[in-house]
Image (cartoon, rainbow, N blue to C red; front, side, top):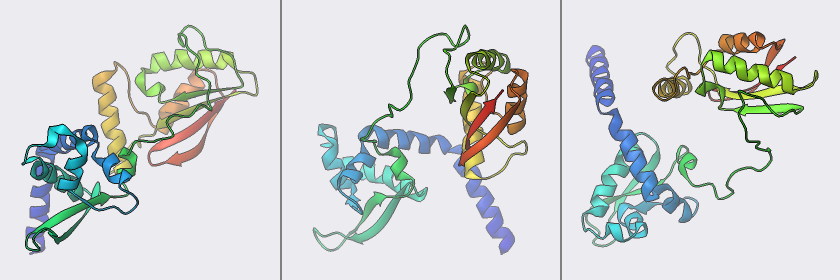
Length: 239
């Protein structure tokens, strides 16, 4: 019995991989339709049916089948715990049940941030491979993973020359372990790594050892790993 259950689980996993693109397409549709924002604007703890959500989307959902089609997308998202779902009796006739959807812990990352971006960091334009403006601290957030090791070395060398002896370069990047892991953090970073492979020549996610090699290769004496969130890390390199 246990062997059969394991085999069924493995088969189900294989099926998910075959149809995995459907999840990303459904997520894109939900985001473009504003589903997460609609539920959020309904208030904390709001539970909405697909008909109620469709009514807020606009003229494009006047098709009588729109709520049903939307419900099928929302049901998929709920099966991945992106949305939460409950089943209640249909208040209109008291017979058929209907699904109500609410925001789950993952959903908040797809709700529009009304505060917008932060203005606490000065953004300076220019060619960072030619020169970097001087400063006590330089922030490189999601920059190095776009570039090859050779480009990163050139950039970090320019940063080295732009800071004083007591200055530092702050790097925000994901960290990949040497041995592949099955955690959600490593899975997401591995996906990002392959995205870099397909989009940016030489771009990649790196391990601790690779960041240390880049830092010392550019002339820095060491690296500190200051803060972690999921697979992302705030690092400081110094002279």
